[in-house]
Image (cartoon, rainbow, N blue to C red):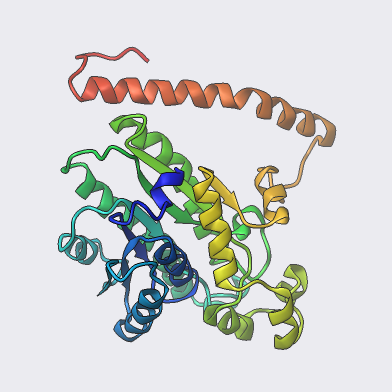
Length: 319
């Protein structure tokens, strides 16, 4: 995985879906400093132009290419048309989304907030992945794996009131990463690598918009009930989070938690769900952690075998 982000591979094309601002732009800045060529996709042309100038300034070489396309990432046809103007990307980074205007309790937010949150956080991701995958499957396989980086959230492991629209979409991204990782084994063990990162709160324009609409209870529970000056001192910026994500990718991590709290939550997959038989449920969790890896390996093997049979190496498959 390290060489996919190494500066010597300067001809790699990285597509950042949601690259005009926030975490997407921060990751683009990090990868530009490592020599990557970048294509930034987002809806707003003016924001893309600003991001393009910043990313170009961060490039390690004047020979790098930074391009942008104004695309509605909830529309698969627009994504596909944009990608057809370039050679197939080596890396896809999906960061579009957020919840600046969809925070609140279920009884208080309009139904449109639920649909728009699903569109901006989940559809933008799965449609970008699907468009890239269709393009990859009709082009020759590259010597190195192609990489897909999805963005979930620490919220995927919690159930904080006020994030009723947002949290389920980020749980969906985590489930997408698990499902996609195994499904892509159909096309070969090393054809694709899927990664998922789990950032918590970080400073951005969307974060401060969210603070204006966030219920007081949500702020208390997540520790953001403080002045803007205190928030700036306490909460990391998008660029710091991007550096940690890229470091995790360079190490070859599949799941990337950017802080210790999220690392703990990631490894406590039961999350906030209550237990019925406390001791028994705890022991069952320990047992599952010991044996589930064997089932995963077996499922991976069966998936690869099925893919080999489907590709004509064998007319039948025994699973």
